[in-house]
Image (cartoon, rainbow, N blue to C red; front, side, top):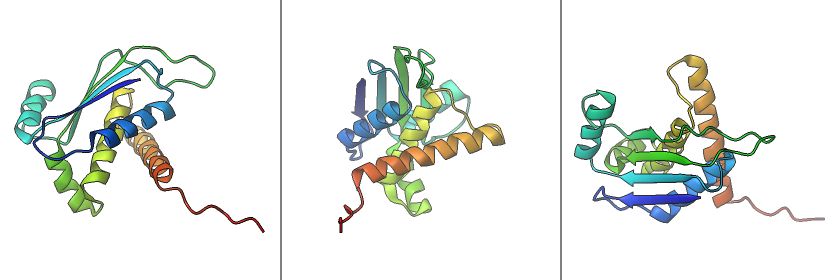
Length: 159
C-alpha cells in the first residue's frame, strides 16, 4: 500500500502514527495491498474553501473524502480490486476542538476522522439511520481493534 500523509495544517501531527492507522484500517477492510491513499492535513481556511467548492457548504469542516477509483471493501472469498482509494483532507484545528468537546483529545479525534474518512472512501455513508448504524458501528470496531493492537493487555500467567 502507498499511504502518503502530508501536514500543511501548521499544527503538529504524527504522520507515522496516522499512516499506521490508515494501513491498519485498509488491511482490516481488505483493501488491495497496492491501493493508494493520500491524507492531507490542512488549515481551517483551506478546508472551508474545499468544503464550499466540492460540497457546496459554507465554513470549515473536520474531514473531506474524495474517492478516486470507487474501491470497495474486499470479501474473504474474492481478490480485492487494485487502484487509488482516494484523498482525505483533515483539519487538525477542528479535530482539536471536537476532541476537547468529546473529552477524548485531539489524537483520538484525528484517529476517528481518519477512520471515518477511509470508510467514506470505501463507499460507506451515514445519511440514513441504517447506514449510520452500520458505518459508526464499523468505525467503533476498527478504532477499538487499533487501540488494542497499540496497547495490548497483560499477558495471562499460566498456572
